[in-house]
Amino acid sequence: MNSLDWAVLIGYFGVMVAIGVWSHKRVDNVSDFFTAGGKMPWWLSGISHHMSGYSAVMFTGYAGIAYTYGVTSFITWSFPIALGIAIGSRLFAPRVNRLRSRLHVASPLEYLKNRYNLPTQQALAWSGMLLKIVDVGAKWAAIATLLSVFTGISLNQGILITGAITAVYCTIGGLWADALTELGQFVIQLLAGLSMFAAVVVKLNDKGIGFLGAWDEPALHGHGKPLVGPYSMVFLLAFLFIKLFEYNGGMLNQAQRYMATGSARQAERSARLSAILWLVWPVVLFFPMWMSPLLVHAHKPDGSDSYALMTEQLLPHGLLGLVIVGFFSHTMAMCSSDANAIAAVFTRDLAPVLSARARGWGERTGLIAARVTTVVFLGLSMAVATQVNSPAFKDIITVVIKWVAGLMGPIAIPMMLGLLRPFRRSGPTAALTSWAVGLLAFWLVNYPISWNVDGGVPLQYQVSVPLAVSLVLYILIGFLKPEDTPQRVAVIETVNTDGDPAAVPVPAEAGDDVVGAP
Image (spheres, rainbow, N blue to C red):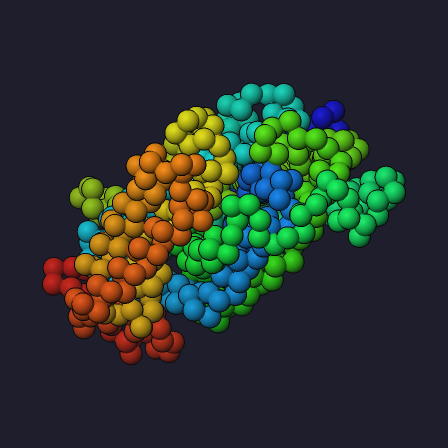
């Protein structure tokens, strides 16, 4: 990087902070901070949903998969995400929106107290929050890895810089700042992605290979196959189910985008826009990665530095800075939205149980608590980021695929399926059992069993077994021990119907307050 690239990068950071300061004026209460008061346009929600779904891991971990295996990086990652969001646009998006508009909650997990019971809500909230700390830690490590390639600064310095900038704008501006910065980041990403695409096409032509002839090169032999290596059909199907739950609310931050729109219909439209973007745009981003074996030789065994090396070689100064800004835009979009979601979970779901004072927070105190929680979450995730390459986690892509994907099912299944009428018989027993045994299954296939199996348990089973165990138990226990009380059925009906909210009462459990009641 030279002074022009640094100017682009510093200018980007300045714009992000300025948007956060401007958004601060739109945040008057906790609802504004966590769900934009339900006033976000569907198209902004859709772009925000898309941008908050991936990070610099795409340019490190998934770039390594593209470098090693080719198009399977798209088939087993962005394609199932696009399909999962498309399915969820009808199945989940309208119902998640009604959590805010009908039940008046500000956290996606608030409704679980009445849908199941308090212990279930607390179990899912704590485990989801801890998983998010690890997940976001991997994102900080990914962007710090890229920054170290271009600037030479250490990983810890890179983590500190990106985390601090993100903390400023998302803490003062809430979800409005997240969404507006993500809109700006989307524009930057378009320019950066198209620049890189064009640079690779020009380079291929200069080498006499051509756009289409590249696939016939020996270095790309087998790279056109959709499923290769550890990425089998079992892995693809498991990943589709995981992403169906994760990207429609299971990882919390995407749920907020649906909640922020004005109506269930607008939430559905925002989901469809996000699905289209996930289907089309990653192809443009992945093409240079698929061509990378023809242009660079990765230094790292997993090829995770291939995209950064290619960027450094192909782009002139200025455009190099723009692409680096594109890396930051992905990571900061996801991490800031995750921080906002976890702050909502802690202040709305966990703090009131831990402290009697928290139950009496007014609007101003609740808003201060939300901002403090956001900073604390970002600090914890940055601390985890420094350990991502330790033996406990192994590497970035291991955290993202094995840990996050493997643990997503047990946490998300009770939350997401609890919204749907066909699963009304599944109550707290089904939810807690599927959650606990699913986590146990993850531990078994990743650790004790792996120690006794030559080569370890295949990746597809590390990801699919916890999901399958949780799903089967959730459904089976619901049939064997139905717990569809009138109060729980009323919650389900409330999020499954439109019309006058007063027409569908939500009675409370004995001794419980109605979710969202004053």
